[in-house]
Amino acid sequence: MKRNEKILVKEKTALLVIDIQEKILDVMAHKERVLENTEKLIRGMKILGVPIYHTVQYPKGLGDTAQPLKEILPGEAIDKITFSASGAPGLFEEFANKKLSQIIVCGIETHVCVQQTSLDLIANNFQVNIPADAVSSRREIDYSTALARMASNGVEVTTTESILFELLENYKVTEFKEIAKLVK
Image (cartoon, rainbow, N blue to C red; front, side, top):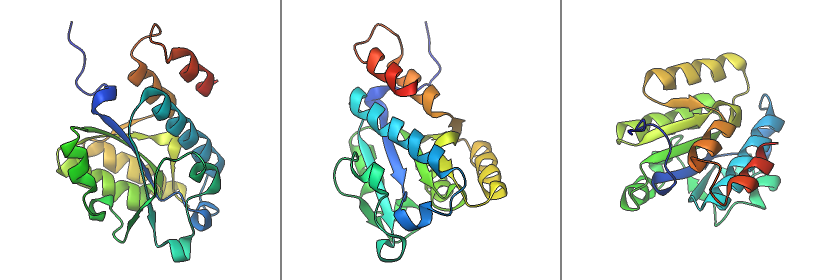
């Protein structure tokens, strides 16, 4: 039986956390929700063995990655100067070289860095999944307009829990209990 090609597959998926930095996080709408769901995504990807990447922009002015996430994120943040992570040297190429074609993008701000990164990923033939509960902007109109624009350009707008269960595929896999604990 065929499955929809848009359903996430562990071996083809990566998580990209965009610019969840100390100083800008404080002015985001629903910042607690974004932190909570981003943490679930990071922990879930670790359980599932899905690669995780994260960026920072202008850390001198915006601060480092927010502490609760910095403690659990693997590796160093990718410093970028462009709003889109397409400007991060070698990042999209690494996705392609590792045959990672489905990219989950979360972070801030929805209408700036998240949106530009997502549209550039789409332009480079990646599937993009945005968990609407793990992105934010300062203003609701920017957030909702960006989600609508991205969806109209082929981005899959979904939720954190939906992503985690798509990657599990079924309840008989060994990771099921750990993922189920995360989403409670």
